[in-house]
Image (cartoon, rainbow, N blue to C red; front, side, top):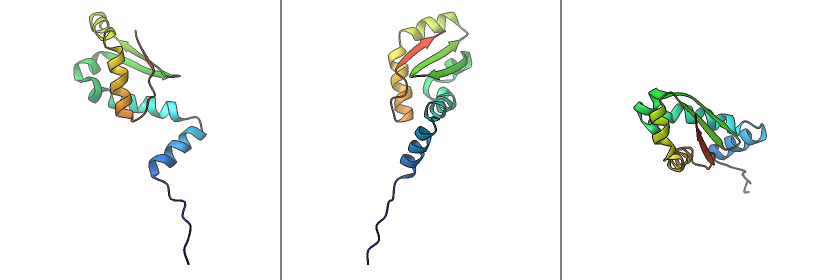
Length: 97
């Protein structure tokens, strides 16, 4: 006698749960903050004061004007690195302040 199973990976179950309760963006925003130093390096992380993710727009607050200017040329690369770390395309645009 065979038994039907409805096995699903834990990752898929968590993703469905986060989406069902509307927590997916908040979860990934927290993950970005957690991995920020790993993604961008300690020098940039030390000068970052705040990171927000709202509706696919990542807003990064940088205290150094010169660093902010330098990073403005790498917005697409920043989004690409973050999306790669998250494993999904959560960041569509990057804004530096």
